[in-house]
Amino acid sequence: MMPMVGTGTTGSIVLASDVRARRPRHDAFASGTRPPTMTYSICVRERASDGWRFGVAAAARVPAVGGVCPHASDAGAVAVAGVTDADVGTRILDAVADGHRIDDAIDAMAAEEGATHRQIHGVGVESAGAHTGADCQPVAADRVGDGYTVGGTAMADEVVLDALERGYAENERDAPLVRRLLTALAAGERAGGDGRDLPVGSAAVVVRTGDGGDPLHHDLRVDASETPVADLRDTYRQAKRGYEAAVERYTENS
Image (cartoon, rainbow, N blue to C red; front, side, top):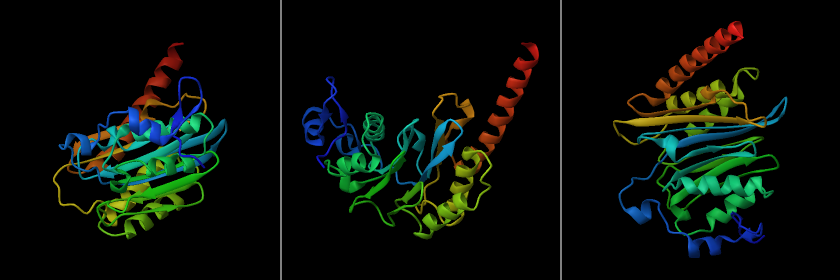
């Protein structure tokens, strides 16, 4: 299949080569100032009462991973790591929304300049896919499962992916997806997580469903912390409690 990344203004498919020719690069290769955002992450597709639910969670030993790595919409979820560019995730989800399979969109991104330093994995309604560039900082690997993908770069060990898979699969299936994704992240961290000895890390989680009515606590980030995964789990608990209290208060007053 021809590489593609989305559609042009006329609705025609835009080839990856066309995008390379016309778009300025603004990733770490271009700036020379941003360190690689090595992460461990998970993307999930699940059935919901109104169609599909997509979620993604990621953690790293650098600040603000939530600004570049996790992407989710009502059509799919994507994680981008290594030499990151937030636009990659956006372009993939745009292509999926335009009717392309997510594995084809990931393959198109994998053919672009700089992709050997980048990891991309994600799930859509019809498919899932993953790419780990040959120049990603080891330990780097990805896996595609039944309705989910996991990946990591600069991991302490590939057992981190085992832990992510188990943390998600063995969690309570009737629990909120955000909580289960955070449980998976915590399992990955206990298995070694990001193997770099850096003082400040970050973590993020995003969940989207088809009706667009996701609570605000389904999109959370901890941008700079010594214990980002634990802090994100606490942020979720507090945000969920606050959201439910607000709903109850306004319901009583309506």
